[in-house]
Image 1 (cartoon, helix red, strand yellow):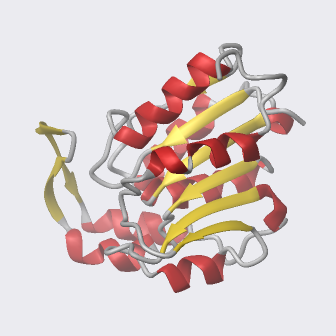
Image 2 (tube, rainbow, N blue to C red):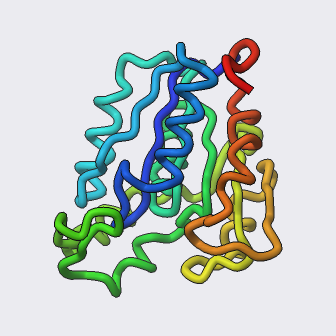
Length: 200
C-alpha cells in the first residue's frame, strides 16, 4: 500500500522548524504533491501530545498513512505505529525517554526558536513511562536510521529495540543526523509513495 498521508514528529526541545522536518516536508511537497503532510508542534506534556496526535489523524486512512519521528518523536512514532498499524520511520529514536528525561525537569528553550520556552514537569516522566511499548510487533513496518556517533542516545539500545526492522546503521554521525540529506532518499523509498516523483 502506497503512503498517502505522512506525519512528522520532532524531538525534545525541537519544533516543526527543525532541519530534518523542513527537508522532509520540502521533498514530499516537491516530489509527491498529492501526499497529505502534517508536522505539528508537539505539546510538552506527553499525554497531551499523544492525545493531540490521535485526534489529528483520526480521519486518516490507517492502511496508507505513515509517521516519521526523530528522537523523542521516534518514541511517539513507535507508539502510534503500534496503535494504528501504520509504517514508521525512526531517526535516532528515543527508546526509554522516561529514564533519559528524568534528569531534565525544568525550563527549556527550543533549539530553533530560543524565544520560545516550556517547562518539563516531573509528571511528564510518568506520562512517558505510561506510553512505553514493551516491544515492537511486525518489525517490517519499521525503518530506522541510527548513528553510532549519537552523543545523546546509545545506538546499541536503539538497534536492540528495533531488532528485525530495516535498520540503516551509520558508522559515525551524530544525534541530529547532520548528514540527513544523504539518508532522505532511503526514508522516502521505504515510505513507498505512489508513482514516479514529480521532480528528480
